[in-house]
Image (cartoon, rainbow, N blue to C red; front, side):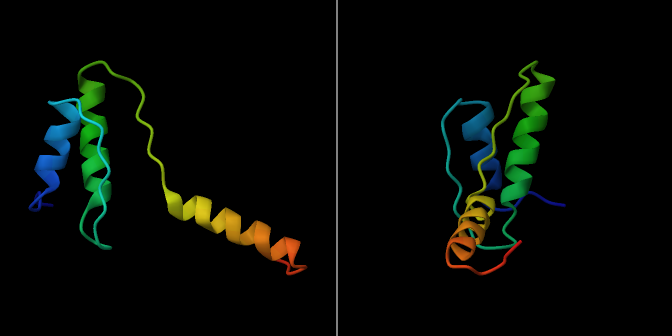
Length: 75
């Protein structure tokens, strides 16, 4: 897969400039490519931990909890 416009800039910000970064893009843009490539570069440099926060999972858990509180069985 080719790097898209904006992806290299995001990877560069993380890996070379050591900046904090939030990427907000449409579905299919390649956000995963940014954090996978950055993680690979970090590990090649001996850095071991990458934290990726996905609000989607948190949103799903919150929705399930809310459903249960309303008496709706949800998984």
